[in-house]
Length: 216
Ligand SMILES: [Zn+2]
Image 1 (cartoon, rainbow, N blue to C red):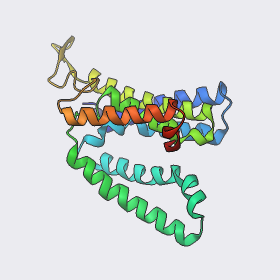
Image 2 (image 1 turned 30 degrees about the horizontal axis):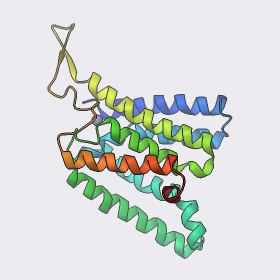
Image 3 (image 1 turned 135 degrees about the horizontal axis):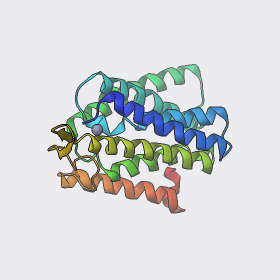
Image 4 (image 1 turned 60 degrees about the horizontal axis):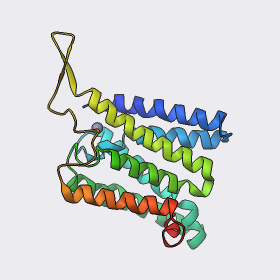
């Protein structure tokens, strides 16, 4: 598989591309452009949430534990206000909950190169990216979702490219890992069904007006 630095570089490349499109074509502000760059770069690492070891994974979990409560901040403060005592509890508990509980569960239930390395998971992440930025307008949501999707897909492509080794210096020869990144289903049927169900919900939240739109 491709290493952490390669994936980070892939994420940064797609994040830069999408943020430049956002700035020059969609007229995003500098702040919005920066946000697209960050979510696109982080998305380049997301499929490796299923890898159980290493500092990069700790870094990724910590980043997700800060980014997710920050993205939900506006909605939460609309409901609970923004008193300092609430903010301290909100950020501390969110960090502990995501970094230790959710990520602990992800580590336990995921298998490396399982369903997190697949196209439906990439689409799911892109859809969630769209929903998280929906309140910032359609252009911003579309670019954020695209940046996340592109980051994930580039990660999968890099893993697939890395699943070839050169024999005799020039003959590409597939390793056993070939085909385990860019796929539509994993070896686990429950995990595959679960991700497709979540994808269905996210697609409904994006496109179907009515009961599902309140999730957005
Ligand atoms: Zn990977």
